[in-house]
Structures are given as structure tokens and as C-alpha cells.
Length: 47
Image (cartoon, rainbow, N blue to C red; front, side, top):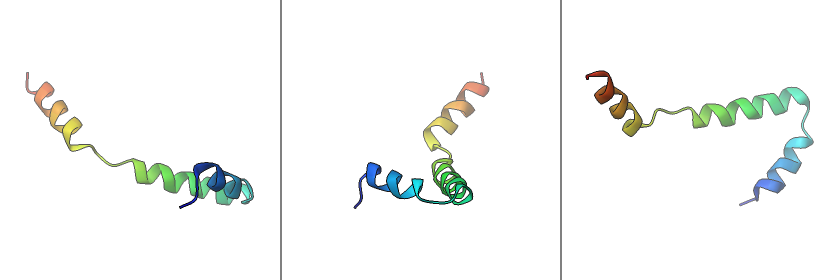
């Protein structure tokens, strides 16, 4: 597996629009609900 530094160097070689698409894909992959946090919010809202 490539290191983060290696991947970053490759990303810097992309066109700006391709870098934006890459960033969006990474952010999208991180934007998943955390079940524990959701349960905490539900419990908090019931008080």
C-alpha cells in the first residue's frame, strides 16, 4: 500500500478538477453516520 505522502504527490499531478473530484470522493467516504453518536443524540433529545 502506498503511503499518504506518495498518494499526495500523485494527487498534486492531477488537474485541478480531478483533485476536486478526489477530495469529494474522500469526504463522501467519511460522511457516514456513527450509530453510537446517533443513539446519543436520540437519548439526549428524549429528555
